[in-house]
Image (cartoon, rainbow, N blue to C red):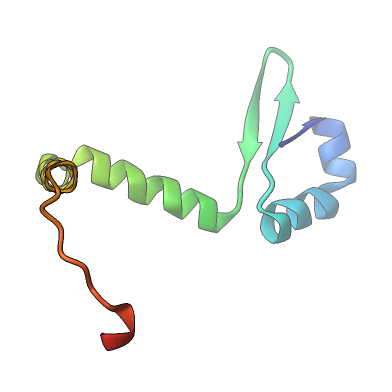
Length: 83
């Protein structure tokens, strides 16, 4: 993660955007006592997808049930090459 000021970000915007897009980096842009975080669109979409899963009670019950099955050994091996 990189940290910068608004004026430095403005001057070097292309460099920061390239780092976010091509290097999966994030940039904290400080502005007084607060700031903003610049992330790639892929990272943003991943975060929003995770939020949607966590907000779904049905999905969380399904995940919890799967984790319980794994801990109890209720699993089925699958040969990925056979799929």
